[in-house]
Length: 78
Image 1 (cartoon, helix red, strand yellow):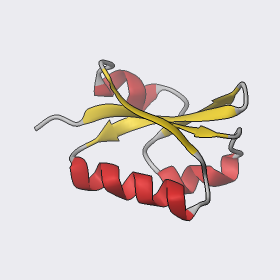
Image 2: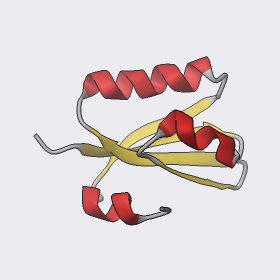
Image 3: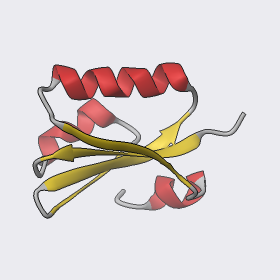
């Protein structure tokens, strides 16, 4: 089963110190929000990421799967 690329958007422009919390994901901040994008292998991993967002006190704006292939996301922002 191939991972699905998800984009999780939170309110606020997160600094680099949040990168370890979302290892394997790309963080892109701008316009008062941050998009956290990367491969998610199953629903358990997705729920874990959403719990992490809550544990960090971040305000969730949206969660959406994207049609972007895994290879393109893995090379961006690294």
